[in-house]
Image 1 (cartoon, helix red, strand yellow):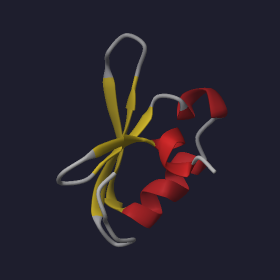
Image 2 (spheres, rainbow, N blue to C red):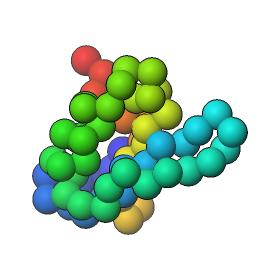
Image 3 (cartoon, helix red, strand yellow):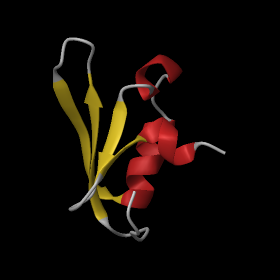
Length: 64
């Protein structure tokens, strides 16, 4: 993901196996990460965070 900052407004969404998209949050990156972390592990695989210029899978973002 390109450079961003903690307060950047992002969209946290879940992409289902059926191709359906559910937005969980529009808000600051820090809040999106908190909400994503609270989701069940099997759902986290389909979570994505979108900024104005990029999209990244949640699990790729938090990988060690």
